[in-house]
Image (cartoon, rainbow, N blue to C red; front, side):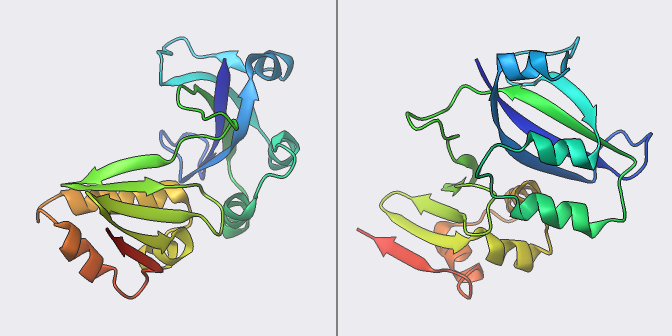
Length: 184
């Protein structure tokens, strides 16, 4: 079984929700048991299965070789220290042949949105039928004043509330940051 590790950063020790969440890599069950992760009593398939509270130093030690730590560095440097950091391990079902996580996705009315990763050069792909456009994740971070990929996802989910956005309206809204547009 493969698990995705996600670091949650809490500003205050008693906060019920984190200020930031950052994915930090994939690990197997052996890694979790060897490194002191504890099973969550309420875990269900697709939810937090294991967790561990760590320091910033221990968090950096957990990163897999070659990990793009851009987003993690930004979160750590945004604050003068966090009251607590909890790393959660979520069971992964969608992993491709190369061991990569499938793009994270959401839907804004009829438009599918796929976020290819949380690295500095990751793309966000908007698709409807045979049309698509791509926006660099960094551009959306700037536009939404977001630091993490998860914050960008929340900002994109806000487009689902109220106005029923069409693909063309989204393309027009983001026209200044689109890097590639295709229509077959």
